[in-house]
Structures are given as C-alpha cells and as structure tokens.
Image 1 (tube, rainbow, N blue to C red):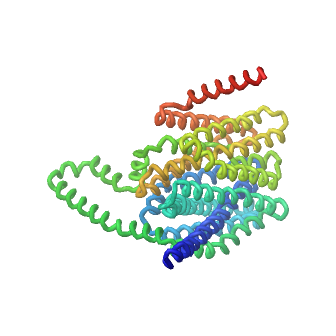
Image 2 (cartoon, rainbow, N blue to C red):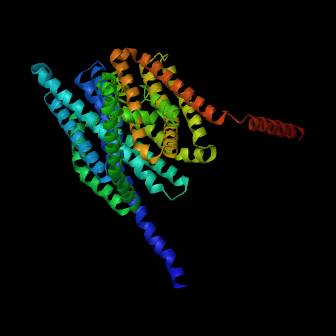
Length: 503
C-alpha cells in the first residue's frame, strides 16, 4: 500500500527534471538562433553600405553562402549522422560562434577604415572575402546544429510519447526560431538606425563571444540528463565498427574478385565508378532520392528560389528604396509574429486535417498572400509599392511556416532513423541550391529598379511548388477534396435557408 502511494510521487520526481531539461534545450536553441538571426538580417545592410547603389555585393555573399550549403550540406548531414552527439555539439558551437565573431570583427574593420576602398583596394577586397567566408562557415555550422536538434534530439526525446508530443516540440522549436527572427532584426535595426553600423557589428561579435559557453553548458546538461540521448549516441558509436568490418569484408571480397578480372579493374570506367561510390556526398543523394518524401522536399526547396522574404536581396532593395533600417526590422518582426502564429495554428490544423492536407492548405494560402507582392509591381508610388511588398511577404509567412512544419514532420515520420540526418542534409543542400539560384538572379538582375522581375520569377517558383505538392497529395490520396462532404454541406445549407424563409 505504501509503495502504491509513493509510486506517483516517484514518477513526478522523475518527470520534473525532464521538463527542466527540455527548457534548457529551448533556451540553448534560442541563444544559438539569436546570433544566427542577427547576422542574417544585418549582412545585407553591411553589403549595401560597402557597395552602394548595387545589389552586387549582397548577391555575391548570398551566392557564396548558398553554394557552401548546397555543396557541403549532404556531407554535414553525413557527419552529424556518424559522429557522437557530444562531438557534433562541440564542433557546431565552436565553429558557429567563432565564425560570427570573425565576421563581426572584419565588418567593424571595414567600417572603421572605410577609406580602404580607395587607398588600398586589395586589402578592402581581402577583408570582404574574409567576411563572406566567415559568414558562410557560420551558416554551415548552424546547419549542423539544426540537424542535431530537429532531426535527432527532438525525435529521440519524443520517443515513448504520443505523436502530438513530437508535433508540439516541433512547433516550439520553430516558434523559438521565429521569435529570434522577430526580435533580433528589430533590436539590430534600432542599433543601426540610432547608433551605427559599427555598433551592430560589434554587438554581433560580443554576443557570440559571451553566449558560446552558456550554450554548451545548457546542451550538455540536456544530453547528460536524458538517458535516451546517451543511448542513441552509444548505438551510433557501436554501429560504426560493424559497418567498418562490413566494408573491410566487402573490400576483401572485392579485391579477390578484382584479381580474377584484372582487365575490368584496369578500365577507367570501373575506377571512376569505385571512386564515386565511396564518396559520402553521392551516397547521401542516392539515399534521398529513394525516399517517399521527395516531392514534398522539392516543393519546400522551391520556396527558397525567391526574393520574397526578408533576406539579403529584399533588405538591400528596400534600403535602396529609402525605407529606414528600423522600419525594415519592424516589418521583419511583424513577419516573424505571423510565422509564430503558424506554429500555434499548425498543431490545430494537423490534428483535424492530417499532416498531408495541412501542407496543401498551407502552401496555397501562401500563394494567395503573395498575390499582394505581384500587385505591388503596378503601384504608382515607390513607397506604397515597398509597403505592399512587405505586407504581402509578411502575410504569406503563416502558410510558409505551416507548410515547413508539415514537410519536416513527414520527414520525421517517414524516413528511417539511420537516414534522417543524411536526408536532412540533402534537403538543406537542395534548399540552398534554390537559394543560390535566387542570388544568381540578383547578380544577373543587379539593378534595384528591376527588382520587379525578381518578384515575378519568385512567384512562379511558389506556384510550381504548390502544384508539385498538390500532385504528390493526389498520388497518395487519389483525391484532393471530399466532394461528398461538400455536397452534404450545400444540401444542409440550402435546407436550413429554406426553413428560415418559411419561418
């Protein structure tokens, strides 16, 4: 009897640390994302300041950042899937924070010695290159952290709970990210507008210097306090030797076979095939294309082939239009608030419509909101056009982030645990490839007066994404709408209207 009385108390004591550790996870994620969002917002303003009246520098940075993620994203996913959680955690936090510290320092140097562009152009270009490389490495490191938290830790922590628990954790993680997207640009925009660009770059470097130790303590506390994470990490380590033995046996048998068919091994084609098959990059893409979520992944990636977001190009274009930095920051903050609303709306829709159908409604609602951006092209006043553009982009975030959560949950549910980070890395690589093409558009159409062309191309990419996802849903469900329910609703409404008239 005494044991029965004490058992709920013991369970309560065991559950309480888990809640506090999950809070640690959320706080650590917030600190890491804040630094990344500060850089993401301010880099466009730095580049337009360094090279006024042109989107060239902003587009070049975007190309480098996107190309690095597109090229190394699958490899990052492969490493995250093979290394221990602690090793990934250390590499992620050190490389991300150090990169943003260096990037902030080089920007301060460029702003303090602004005459370098005239007096020593070579030094000016070298500092710009260092800024670009540091920023790209920081974003690539952020990808490793995203894969670790979203594709591994959240799923492992949710094991043994109801599916709604995973949906809730996904929504909270995305809400934290969007909260940083809301507050960081507003704070940075006010610093730039009312203090200086130098102060914003300095604050970026100081933030990453101070927060790295706190972030590591929070995340390592989560890892040490949740046994499931340690068990998952140990399973990955214990799996590696057997895989190595398998590869050795495979190599040995291959050597025996090759000794019998020397002519085949001597051919260039066989050597090339052997080389390609041993590269993790190509193997990662092979794993991705074998998944059932390829079309939703492509549809999500197409949404990155756009300038219709508060990214580097649109921020630089709005700055050229004469919109103050703090106004852009506030608009970006409003956009993030609407995105945060999506993290609240998504679990409700998902519980009623299913994950697949929530994605359908989300992407088409985004498409409808972006019609305002298309209409802004024909606005006669430049300031009105800019505000219509910002309003359309902000409103579309409700559909965008709901669709993003839908696709992420489909990947978590339908991709095997051993392939989850690899598929996530390839997905981010694909998204960055689309992002890269968007920045290439910015280089080819670098005149801010021609920004309307980029708007139309971006809207076309969103339209294609919506059609692809609609096709994917149809191939699975064999229908898009429950017409029988719609007919019953019409009959009920007609009958109710007729009864009301009789009364």
